[in-house]
Length: 149
Image (cartoon, rainbow, N blue to C red; front, side, top):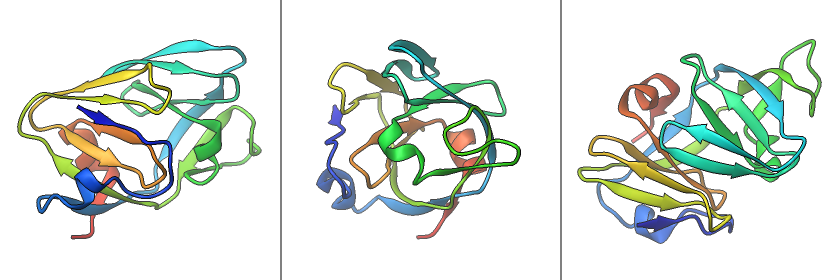
């Protein structure tokens, strides 16, 4: 089990693992809406709780995920005619992550302490460097991240 710390910086468990790789998010378009009230987001890896103001993103395959309001602006920029904070089309910024390709089932507890994601062998455990962890399926990882190491 892995736990998001909510504190800036990479987790020691991933950073110290000799199998970790560094990668960079590729620019890609996503549709974004912002939660008006507390809600639940069904992601491919599990149920995630969203708070008002959190971004709820929809990927090219129709998958959904949440990015907290605190981290969203550092990871995505609006594409015209959308303006920052408005629903619409956004582009991912090229931020760095550390990741491990997992060989067995695993779980991630998000920083809210309630939301849990479940990963399978071959999935990537991704450390975003901002205190949050995530799980990314192999095909999605290959399409959305560029290996740096």
